[in-house]
Length: 113
Length: 117
View 1: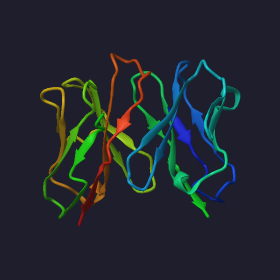
View 2: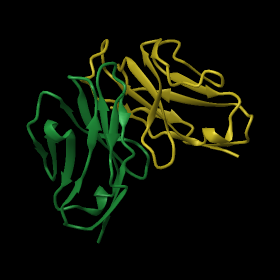
View 3: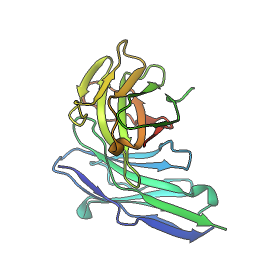
View 4: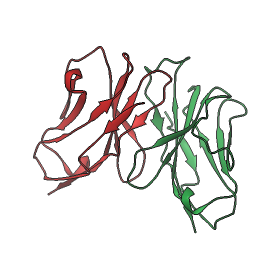
């Protein structure tokens, strides 16, 4: 069975602070894919990144960066210089074979002025 | 490019009543998903279609839930009769995939928020 754990239920930061959202996963598949999605108050999940299990290179996209470590089964997401528009619920998700996405419970990020 | 369209956005019904949700995926996307998202939780897959075929409906409560995608494009999810525990957001997603290739990300619609009273 697959499982995704996002232990941080809610995080509050002040604008311009850096923030890291944690994601720990469990899977028996040797080939799997990890995702991060953003869900703003409007409700629509927005795809942020996909990473496969064979690619442990960290990735940076603007203010966003991701740290994938197979040794600790973690796929953490960092927002640098946070902005109010980053306020949303962020979901980490996992899929092995079969395209079935298993989501974590999400982390509510609040960025205040 | 238009995104995934869902309607209605909100629905309030009394228990034991039927309800239906509609989804139109992104043009050209052959795979369509229905998810249910309970408050404070991540989405959970109900059913996945590849074209008009339901290839994974193991999580769909078949006693009261049904879904169809007759022409392999838009889809309808129905609940009959609704129960109080069905209150949730129902999300539709689509992706461009073939077989079991998970390389293509899923694009989500805004969801339908169902309240059963």
